[in-house]
Image (cartoon, rainbow, N blue to C red; front, side):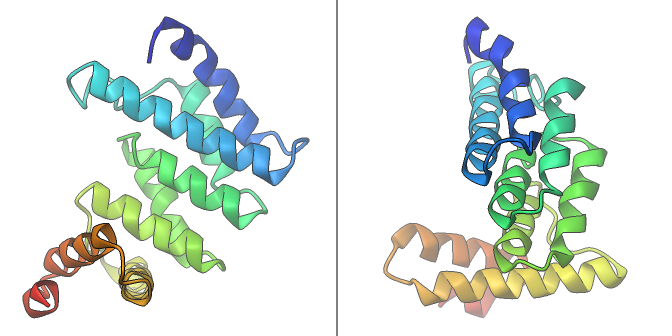
Amino acid sequence: AGAGDVKVLPQIARLAADRSHGSLIRASAAEFSGQLIALAKRQNGSPAAAASPSADIVNPLIGAASDPEPSVRATAVQSLSAVVDDRTTAVIAARLADPARVVRVRAAEALLDRGIVRLDGAVGAALARAQDEWAESLRTFNDDGRDQSVLGWLEMSRGRTPAAIE
């Protein structure tokens, strides 16, 4: 992310939460925000260096995670996975009970990216269900090597070594 990217990132993030635009624009803005955050992390050479973007970037993505459209919520949750702080972890965990499967699965994926594979209580049960749904999706379209690798890592992280090896 060059200097120009850093200047436009808050504007792009705000677009993700601006419901005066269509869901495709909002979802695309959320996705692009996540890509720019991840790029900044890689270019700074330290994940911690860009792990906590400013509130004018994070707050709109948090808002987009509650958008009426599942595609926007799912993309916002995926983008928030690049922002490491307790507030975004709670927002992602809240999406584990989302009515849309794609959002629940993205939340489970985002939590795995953070190394979170188990939680206590009702949210832990929701995480396990979302992980099961994610695994089912990965098994359904099993002709993609990347998906098979992801499935193996998911099962291994859950302590299911025989399933991971399979």
